[in-house]
Length: 357
Image (tube, rainbow, N blue to C red; front, side, top):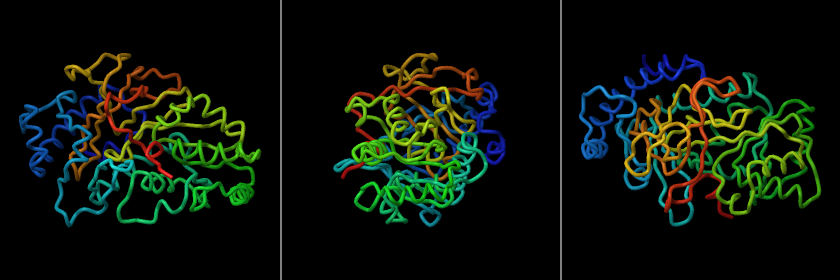
């Protein structure tokens, strides 16, 4: 099987046994490709004891620490083939990851995102409200994770309108006008968690105003640390939004710039789902062996959709558990997971958490 064949499979139709077989072949070939084209990655693999040209299981694919993308330029294509350079989010003083995409990799990752999101919102494009400022897209050549997120999700919307001004103030009248044009129909709302809470929910609450978003579908992501510090849980977040705009379909997602497009969407049962186009292993924090389902450890994310840079197997700095496989009440096949926090001394990251005024 090749990458195009994989994209023909539904986002939640691939059983785990078949997936392990397909991913073992794809990721093993991809590891050798990156080893032959990226000297630093080849050195990392040597240090990890990986033997080039061997057949590897998914668990044997070498893991690149996510922090390495902040320390060095990891690229497997010639510089002239780099189509887009994305950066991860980072607060002042933090280094950011740089991800080098050629046109093929960018296209695969965009199609991956599209297949996943369509499973949740349907095939039809609908009016879209972006809870952010249009100024975030000023530099179109150097994409931040926040700007890339907005651009990536914008393909699902029509009549796109930004809810915030250049000064990150809620433009209530503009939002109300936008909703009037939607005429009570479905609306896609997209934004980053902390920005939605601070600049949308809290602004509406302070004004004592509401918005008619009963038919809205809100997708948000980017981290929870700031909200957790303010004692805002997922339930409080959802209840607050329902109080000010009547929205009940609120879905979180987990993702990262290092594997753009391969996001893990929250289903109606509250679990994050691993799609056909990526995989997750939970690693023991002592010896990096794979944990049993239900056991907390460090999250490893894998995808064959990282062709132009060696980001196909990444050891993150996030902790989580695999809740189950193929048996979520929502009916989607594959693993479903829970994010439980960050490993000790890991930098804060996430489009919301790293937003600074």
